Length: 322
Ligand code: GTR
Figure 1 (cartoon, helix red, strand yellow):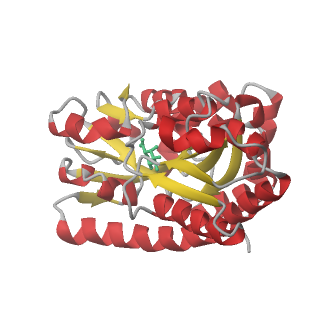
Figure 2 (figure 1 turned 30 degrees about the vertical axis):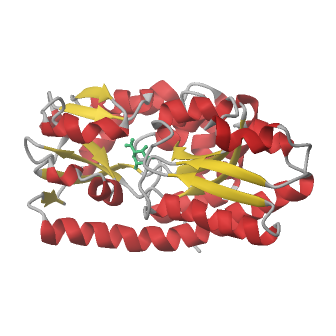
């Protein structure tokens, strides 16, 4: 890590070649990883090879929470992570992670492409981070080894792994489960060994992590549709010339539609693989209204300031119409 970010350290602003390090918990081939590689290629083309990106997938530079701290301190240049763990650094990030905040994937995309998304990206500056863009993360749903979940009552007493996120702890608790925060990389073993009864995630993560091999039931609760985010360390950003900042911004925004295409294809492929090649029982008949009602106190608990309340209202008002 130290060696790979060394070229940045001695550089004058805007001078000399740079190799930006990028981290992601997902493996090669996952849409978020491929989107950042795409961004790197665009950056290389735009700058005649002066700016390059080297991606380190599979959490090899640390789990999300640790990699985030390293990014704030400038030890990593680019970091693709989920909004849930980011809220520990910038509390306003909790708002889009609230259960049932988004009505659909189209609604999430419209809100993140619009003013609420810009507000969230801008909110990161005081925390040593430059928010570049949002990527899709589908809808998260519960899976477990014990029983089908159709109503909140079915969650009673289940030990559910969650991300390092106060919202997710509150969400699972509100549903009657026991929330166990844990790094993504530890979840497979925890499921196999029965340390937890279940977890929750979108189709592509459920599949690529092989969690589906360790559980019996996947209940399509679709309780959170929060996006992923791509961050740059503010220390790195501050070393870039205005022109290079523009290249980074443009390459990031070009990577978004590319990622969405990959994402839609991957959701379909992961879903198909699980439906056709696994023994997982997929439960579709969920009592949606009961889940919405049960988690309502989570909103009240996290929407305490006018900034957060207004952001939630702006997200809700965003129109998913084209
Ligand atoms: C995935 C997300 C990862 C990570 C993971 C988790 O959907 O893409 O960044 O946050 O969930 O559950 O830890």
